[in-house]
Length: 549
Image (cartoon, rainbow, N blue to C red):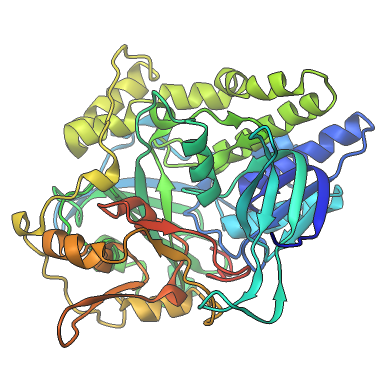
């Protein structure tokens, strides 16, 4: 048993994204309104708030306006309102056609929305929460769950610092702390490792469809002033993904002569030869996209998995001792391709539930009512209206699935009495490599397309070199004995950071894990066909350091 320092709080929040920070702010607002003393701690594994945040991002201000009605006076970093909103179908590598506004599902319309840096919004939310009295611990990982004798969550244990790759304590070793709480809120983002454990332990996803995921890859570019068109939003469907995979691309013009460009590729694809990273490099060469990047300079790169199953895949979000919220549970609205406003609302509802529970003898019963409260809110109604969006696309394909969703959303407001479900987990969709053709991906030109290592460099990713590998293999032999002969070891290609390599040795090939490259995107934890890889937290403050992604 390790002798750990113990700190006690009323509420501990894991994760400094929009869900966790909104929980923190709302808790303190409610406590002040009640003249109630409240101690709230938020832990964030990034070196600072926003360091690990990467998102498109076009956001609705709905939840923000509820949380801070005077957010403009307070200086929230929403500066660029959408003024051009286009959806294009890319039929080939050099052809495209703009879709008329009426042809686009109304959930994808962006009137009144803002193009932002989500990292900067989170930094602003952190300032608000600290001014309200929240204690924020950046650079601290929530490494494991703490349970009481009744099997209820009583907090988290932060990661040990100063442990060598061999597991031995180095000089300066510091054991992690036990942060105890009356209630613990998990807002780690998509595929949070503790959220994953909670969902499995308490069977929170029982009777729900499996969660489905996409991998989002994004770059930030500085463009010449004469090319800057702040407020322009371009979404695309079709090429380069086509029949091989579903998903879509985006390009947004921010303020300060900056453009973000990205591709979201659904992780239910079948061909193990596909590389989401290489598909994104191809995407930037399409004339519709490349014209916005002429003479521009790439300044940042990032990637993150996205939980996109929606209402059909949403687990129960309460458990004994707390709540799992935001993208940790999967509250993103896939019909809008937006998760910020929904994550924030889930955090606000969590705060309102917890503040009631803290002041009541029926606290546990109030916590158990959270899912009903969420279902009855505008968040629950919004997710229910889009419940068929993803499974319809998976079952019917991009064209017919899109047609069904247009009818369902534009004419019937999501009320068609049909229920689509995709019961196949994304990791189970891969087919043997010999059944598929490997794409011939072009070499990067250094102007629009780049190799993975130069991209990782732009993410400012860093991990302490002498530390245990945070990518755990349940069976160290399986990548070579099974994944390589059957699937040509797809980890070489689905990872957007070059973490996994097959090294051809003198006798047998070996899997090399370059964990120092890891962007914490969680794709390997999701897509590995044998579910052999488990992502756990590295030493605190490790990973990417995104400037304003």
